[in-house]
Image 1 (cartoon, rainbow, N blue to C red):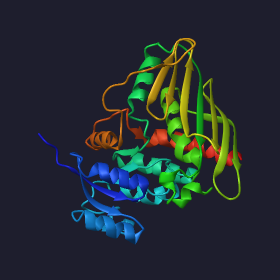
Image 2 (cartoon, rainbow, N blue to C red):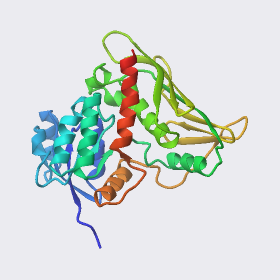
Image 3 (cartoon, rainbow, N blue to C red):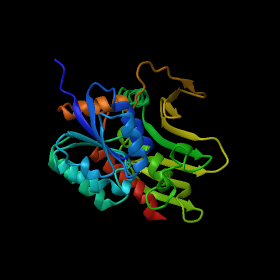
Image 4 (tube, helix red, strand yellow):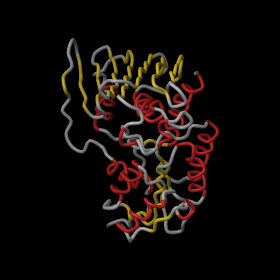
Length: 318
């Protein structure tokens, strides 16, 4: 039996909003009924291309609408609570972009609203359903890794914001943006899931002018396990690297999906087959959550709340 498609509304049609909008249009679990963005030109262009979707510059036309079962929120993080809380209170399921918020009070309100509503509430961490995540998770669980000794995270960017985010000026501003919120949060989620909740021991953000950070250095702990972050913006290749060091095996995740394993002096590639994880697969997981099926490969608000706490601890320590 085919389930009735879930009526999806989208708020925010920037880079991430458009990506998920594109994935949702042909998705068998969803029909996109409404979408909103503050930019009239974006609304006019997309409205002409997709006449079956009701577009608006008003978020109220999506949040709480009686022809929207679930909403995807892709607005700046400082605006999330004002959209997520009323959506949940109106009985809509919520799929929210990361980070959950930049405010502890907002994050707590969102978590409370999710718990009170009983509706599916998830956050779009791109590593939540990656094959590499599940592979390392299994290697830890079955003892191949041995004792987890340390985690190291290295991030580097030739410019910030990255080219695809250049139009979103807030990404380069101190109040809501920066790569610690935008990128480190993904790897904080991964570490939280595979090793344990993080606590910041010492963190430093270096700024140049009024913009977001140009460098980040941090020592954290997941229980007794040390976790280090080094991040920098400058004349260098883009780097996304997460390393789990174990007593029997170590694993290195590079560029989001390239996984390597070491059992001694040298890294060997891990061949992963099948769907690597994408906006499309996370939409499928979100649909399953809406229909009452729990899945560990979709980040919930509780894990996103823990990530928000450690991410914002960097900003409050500087």
